[in-house]
Amino acid sequence: MSIYLIVGVVSLGSCQSTKVNNIVIDEQALLQHIKVISHDSLEGRFFSTPGNYKAQKYIKEQFASLNIPPAFNDGYIQQFPHTLSGKSRQRIYPVANVKEDYSNVTDTIVKGGNVVAMLKGRTNKTIVITGHLDHLGIKNGQLYNGADDDASGTAALFAIASYFKTKPIQHNLVFAAVDAEEIGSPGCAYLLDNFPLDIKNVVLNINMDMISHNDSSQLYASGLYHYPQLQKPLDEIVSSIDLLYGHDDPNNKDVQDWTYSSDHREFHERKIPFIYFGVEDHKDYHQPTDTFENINPKFYIEAVKLIIQAIEGYDTFLIDK
Image 1 (cartoon, rainbow, N blue to C red):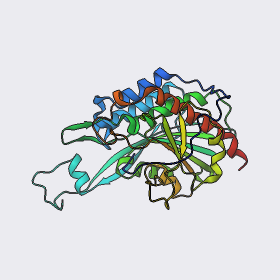
Image 2 (cartoon, rainbow, N blue to C red):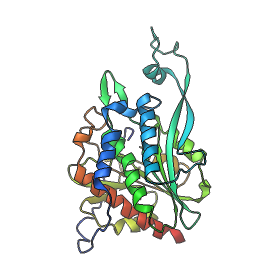
Image 3 (cartoon, rainbow, N blue to C red):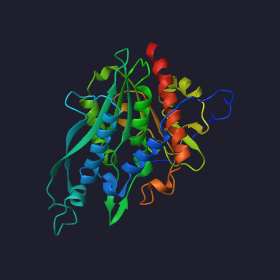
Image 4 (cartoon, rainbow, N blue to C red):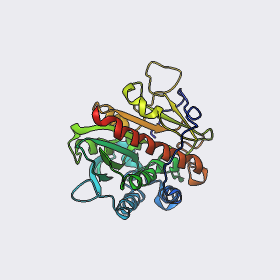
């Protein structure tokens, strides 16, 4: 997640205790994937660095091993150019004797990469499920692994894709591990500007950014202030963790508005509805301590199952909308 956060409303865990959550996923595989993506060897996955490219390769290999087809004819990785200027260019490709205003740092064009897979549905409508693969890299000699932010959302893509690959789905499901969220989401913007299907048929974005670390077992679904018509499938979710609504009202000055806090803003700005799943800030947010050892594994597993329920609900609910 890139920089905003805090509070919301409406809890749902206990009122539906007579129902049963029947979602089954490979829990050990889910935990192994988040562990690998946030491992030291990927060096924090900062945009356009070797560790980031290693992450792209790993994600591509996982989609392929699950037999989830690539969304593009030429493969899973959608490369895109991005120009690094000034301070950001100096951080990755430093020059000696840099001036305070970075006027002697020349622009450099680098390549990013979204990793995108897709399951075909029975209709031409599409739901896009996103998590960002990049993080903060190494700063001042300290490694920022980004386990919760956002290895958690990226690893969840595999569990969700695996769950739905044998299900009869109405919508095309596009699974996108998008790059460069931490520098302003040019990866997600590029994906939407160069989408593998007709962008006019995209009816929903489910974005996952920080879904593995909350000591109070609370997960937020943000976006209903803008898209109240999307509430019913969320109300029907059964989970052992609490699903809360909020962090999306620009008029509520007591809490931060997450509407523009992650890649879902790119959909929102194109008038495509979104639901953003995430947790509130914790002590490890954007810190070197955001490691696999500090996530809440049971919470993470249940959060992914909850999100799968939401996607199932929307797959049915939106087909006649």
